[in-house]
Length: 154
Image 1 (cartoon, rainbow, N blue to C red):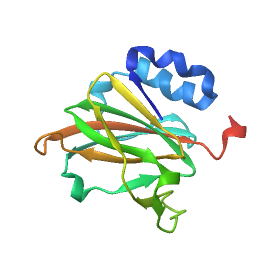
Image 2 (image 1 turned 90 degrees about the horizontal axis):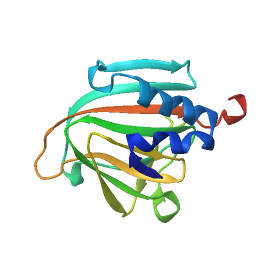
Image 3 (image 1 turned 90 degrees about the vertical axis):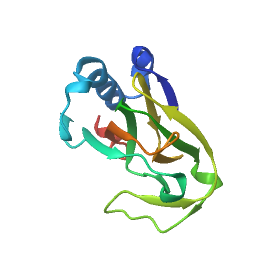
Image 4 (image 1 turned 180 degrees about the horizontal axis):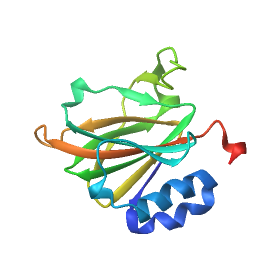
């Protein structure tokens, strides 16, 4: 997992070409002006989804991870806690390959996401996004999906 300021995004360009494409998008796009919906970055290999929602109490959330994609998460408006942990420390439900979703049971820590930060979740990183800081509040968030099982195609 990576958690850092958007101003430091270029420090991570060398990790993988597709991650560089995602981070370049963060540096060049008008993030606050992005409309909800899907935004192409590099075809099906790298794309962004922008969503607006109400944060929720932790008991309404669930732990998740992905095997085929890396998530780059950026809160554009508002703030939320994201639960973070290691997949290897949790119990997994059967993997849903169609949704690229591995639901998990367990415990972890949390990070505060607010505008100006980005978090990268790799396949070994469990996360529980969208958690209320104090009370539920509206959030606008972008999640960039990077096809990680196709790394060699980059």
